Length: 155
Image: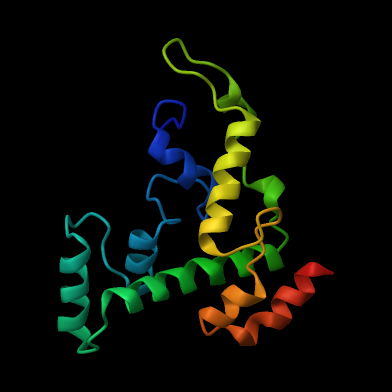
């Protein structure tokens, strides 16, 4: 929907969103958290309002740290699923045409794409080279039971 050559903030989403490149920025904490609980992205709620809404509807009493952990768990689960199905770092790239310059915007080189992807992997607690969630990340998110999935991907 948007051209990442002239929208820097879309580059990360187009490169790393678990459902494929899109403009909804599903790869970030805020939108992943909203996806996890079915909260509409088009409502202009800030993080505090979203959390208040969630707690009011569910009665859970979730704080900001727990909300972010749920979001990180969702992103990590999606990554494990995608990797189990064969998605690899080589797939976290833009189509070749986005490397080409536009009249007013430079193309996004493979090196730039690689830097964005690596930074994202590191921020998520995944291996910088492969994007595979680390054992430490799984443990920290209470996802130890998926270590077998992780181990199978390593084979």
